[in-house]
Length: 203
Image (cartoon, rainbow, N blue to C red; front, top):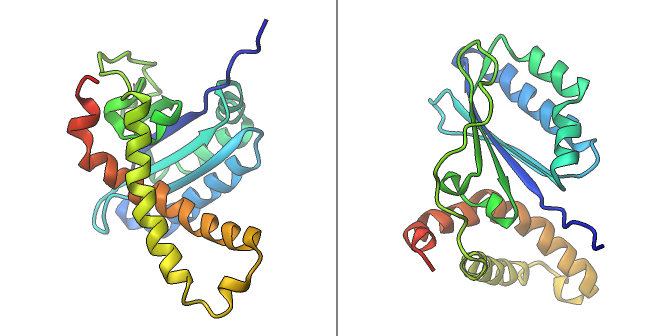
């Protein structure tokens, strides 16, 4: 019997942060990212603020599959980290997304948990939401973001003295290190929002 295919799981969390404790919250969010990075199956994470004057902060992390995700979420390290931020951070919403659609925005979420100001999670709430867009639409979306981004990066890197003489593996390594976070946190979300009507339309 074939082994079941592991589906990466992305978790997106919205938190309300006490505006008077921004410096503490910044260090706290980074500490959570660093802790998660030490766990098996960790594929990446990051966080952003909704705006300079907003108290809404977003955190995103991704694991290889559900068992490795639960290894992090059930760990004493995460429990300690969450407890250390209770004085200034409050979870508002948690979304789990599977597969490549995990990188698309919330309309394609599969599970939503809502938390109150001081109450624990009420548990998963199954939402009557649209299915993830077809794979070909996901592929088109990623290509539309990656092609111009890669083209621009290649043009700019051409101005780096001696870059063209670097070994191929070094050039590819540098470009992917630079482009991966740009694609993940800026380009892909923007292209997804732009194409949302088409992505949500049936086939």
